[in-house]
Image 1: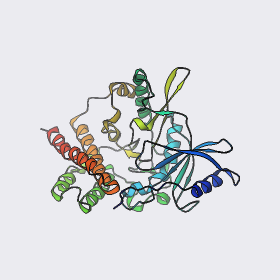
Image 2: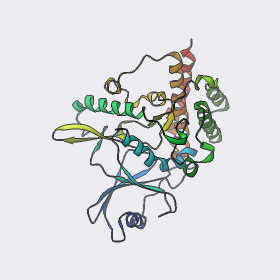
Image 3: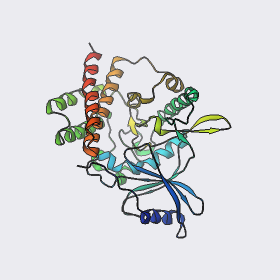
Image 4: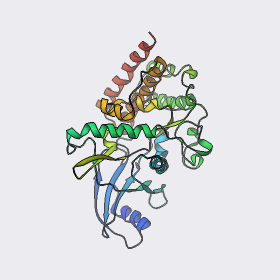
Length: 334
């Protein structure tokens, strides 16, 4: 069981990364850990020549991860390119290095943006209306992004080179319901293996995905950020003006029903939704799908905290969220 999935990057490993990217004469001057995520380790690195970059390192222990998490870092450069091409501010990713290419770790070399996360106490509260509205506008643009080429009409965790980078069991799916059920089944397997939920609870979880036709009304595949919360919105002050500078950490992006993002209410303030263009009056079918997507998140989160971190308080909270959502689902068509 992977309780704590990270090891700090050693000086020797960092030096190999810098020499690979900048050249043999490059040396590290300073580094500091950047906060925010629970999956990757992220460093702001300054070289002795004054270059600023960000190095993001994947977990060392992937044994307890969901299968898509083992492969998701390789997709982030592609998602970043899609966002930039569609007017969504984000940081540029200069290099993706798979395990063993440079060091015995998987990593990204990224643009450093001098900024603050939206949840920082240094961001004035009176600026939140503007900044949340801008973030909502960014999500609206993300929801208009489609993959082009051979996977343009597919669903799931997509990449321009899926066969090379992703597990064959998480292929591009022809139907939205096929992707959802594949992810559902992996959650069930982990929940039972690690005794996070009972068999009865998981039978109920499985049943909410039926019939498949309820989800296959989604025939157009669009991008979801899938991890949009305040730490992943970077903001900057210039000349007294605050603006959103980047939407980051798009490595969990899912292509399918954009209600996936709308089911995660972490940032859904009135200002955010105004920037998004307003929130529609959802039909019962749409509310049902959103509740099922929230269940996917809650059940997987309970597994995450149990398997990867052994945090029983977090497990208890996510179990409560997951099981209470059944009541919401049951009442939708009453």
